[in-house]
Image (cartoon, rainbow, N blue to C red):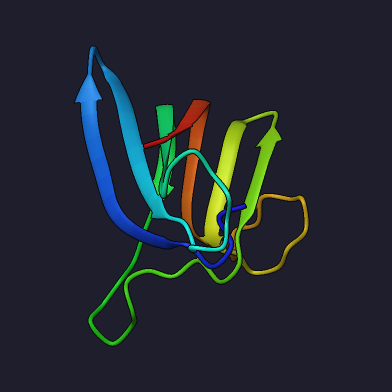
Length: 104
């Protein structure tokens, strides 16, 4: 789970007419993993939205929503609620055709 992790990096780039987003999560110390950082690699991004200002801490995951829908793979790092639905009120979102992940 990425709950209580901290995001320390976003990479957004285009290659061969496809958009990619890599998100790096620093996992809490008490999680037994193969590494301390989880990288999620979103492939074929069709939509994303992030907002941040210096009045907010960057960036602890307090709640999230991660699901597969008919539109693709969806993550919200600031969901309106924790339902298994894509909502217009969700924030900090990525929607992509594929997703991969690995520990660094």
